[in-house]
Image (cartoon, rainbow, N blue to C red):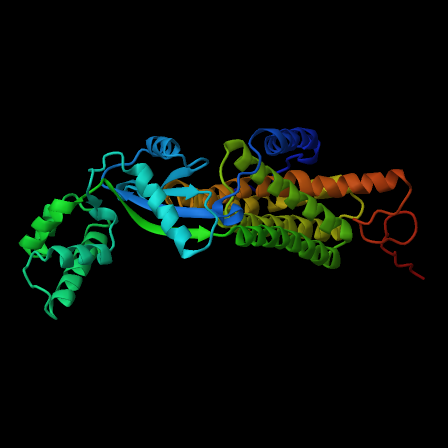
Length: 405
């Protein structure tokens, strides 16, 4: 299947337009990283505490952030996650201790910050553990079991049933204590109403990434990117010529710079999933570049009388249909992921969307012109071009004519 046949677009003739386009976006990204927003690292790299909160209604991240700021928790980040119907947000704190006490500290600080409508003297049933509920029931003994041997197991099982109903059936948030009448004795439910209330939210999960782990992940992410670029340089240098490897590495560096710059300009976090997307686009861009390089190498052997610039143009036009087909289908897939994948995959899919667009563009507009520019530079210095096959003599190899006797 081909979208275009016998195209004859002068891509190299437009190289200065491509250069200006790349410079504008590259410089804008560099300025943003250096002077404006910087590179906003996710909790995976900087360390901190992640608290997942579910609400009984549609949450307002801005209002939640304001409540947290008023409670004295600075530099907190709040974002909605998952489908909007889930009413869930993710709150990132700069608490970096890795102990069990730190887990409780992060959870309790969020609860205190968000409980603007707390009932004085009562506990929040949406954020109480089964042990807390069981101890209260044992103390109040609403079923009048006394201190018998069956009191502790009975109340413990009832408390666990209440928490399971809240977490598994109601998704972590009760609308009212009356909802528990279907899972607990009415007398126990009436007793809970004396000392408990239900808030508008529930803490679903608390995770901590320590500062040492975050630093190690940063180092590994940088090394993974450098190793991929080094491996690409060696592979292309062995398969083609070293200038092909240099051109491909510069092209991928260009793609990565623009992608990271886009995150900086938008002030979006770079997390582990974004690094995974960047490594993916490095492979994708490299594959697209190799297709063009391979066609250039084939045409160099067939069109020895032509200039390299004409050969490169012809090669790009010959692979254009394949490039549009593969890049277009891949782009539609990651665009759907970006639009419908939810907040958790937003950074990952956005990096792929930008990467595929820039990676396809750079294979045509950056990698190939580097080959031509390098050959022209060597020609000006009187050196033999390495992008062309070796020839004997000063001119192109001529076919030998048969001499008739």
